[in-house]
Amino acid sequence: MPTDSLEQILLLAGLFLLLAAAGFLFGRFGGDRDDIDGIAAPLNSEYLKGLNFLLNDQNDQALEHFIRLVRVDDQTIETHFALGSLFRRRGEVDRAIRVHQNIIARPSLSREQRDQALFALARDYLHAGLLDRAENLFAQLAEDSSYRIEALQRLCSIYEQEQEWASAVVAARQLEAAKHPEIKARLSNYYCEMAQQALDRGDIAEARDNVRLSQAKRQRLTRGAILRGEIALEEHDRDLARKLFGRVLAQDGAYLIELLPKLARLYEDDARGLDAALREITAERDAARDEIARAALHWPDIRSPFIDDCVETMISDDPVLAGFIDTQQVFAQDDPELRQAAVERVRTALGQLAASSPRYRCTRCGFSSRQLLWQCPGCRNWESFRPIDKVRFDTLIESDGGVNY
Image (tube, rainbow, N blue to C red):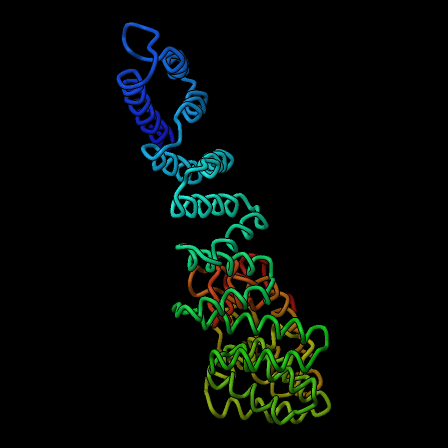
């Protein structure tokens, strides 16, 4: 039997017993009795109507009927909360909303019960994608309720979805004041998002201020260093940009795939300077040559003699590529111009293959993308995206049918 059907049957059975008990108590201690069994006639007829739905396998109609029949009071309110939660889990959000609205409509609710119902209704709206309604209720609960921390957390999530970073900062700072763990990392990223938006519209001063606020929350944030380097580029402070980009690569050379175009811009009037900078990187780490070659495949317009040399080494050392490319024929050219042209053809072909593969992958859930995303769309974690260490040429070649150079 499917789980959903079993849950529904168990729920109906519980309601059935609850109604039977309610009918007995009403008949035993209630007012006027209209039949010999002591059960009030109105309840008895409605009760039989619900049973008729059950006997005809009309479970949805029976459930709706029993919900209307069970009065919200101190004895049944937890049953209603359980009903609403079950409906939400089953994806029947409209029913969950109706149940929780029915609870809120009761005038004699205690403060705690009302907050619980508002929080449940806000979760219903959030599950249904009604973000504005959910936001309003969570904001109300965040002001003064026992659900304040949970409401602030969900407000942060809503503002992240809507990319309302200023509002996210306000909610996160309230969580920070409440000593909520791990909020500093999220807050730091919110400031980075605001800095990126300011940078995109050319407001360098605001971008710098937000990066400073971000780094006050988290000192060694890779994203913060990259943003500071971009701001330095905009302000033509090449020495600072060079220092900041170098710091990022020293921590993780795989980010060269993101920084190569920024380095090219840094040395746009000095081709030898780009070569010298890349050589300096490889002098510090042996793996840097392969990182440069992989990054170059994704940025085919960025060219230099040293980049070509790194690409040639990668092709010669990769066993998969060696099986598809005659390296002797390609690279053993006596004429330097012919040799360079051959390397460029191979690099262009490999770049076309690499363009169809993801560049980054989330270390938490495995979500992959061709763009660097500081928040994973899959698991919603921050800073979990990382450049992929190796291009799977075997898979790419099989799917594409070969390398044409």
